[in-house]
Length: 128
Picture (cartoon, rainbow, N blue to C red):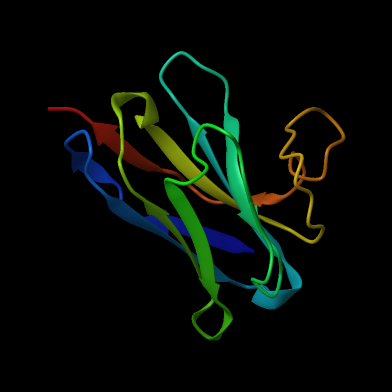
């Protein structure tokens, strides 16, 4: 299983970016996809996730109404549309493929996301 996140870059506060996560080596629609981020000096945290079919999405409070997750299973791709970005959104963003759709987004030992398949991250920097 391989996941590749891309689309990061430098954006001004209030701006937008769209990240992509492309999967290979897996039956893509057998997996829920989660987005996570890790800011400098902080632990990795969940951002949101999307169910296998794409019919259900979940977001943490800090990004609700600003971020949108969607997927195109025909293209083995999940998107993270990020709008109204703030410097607090600066982080390396990761996607993960989980055979279980878990909205808790916990990364504690034994959690399904902790044992999911992870891709390399893409850096998002929000700065003027």
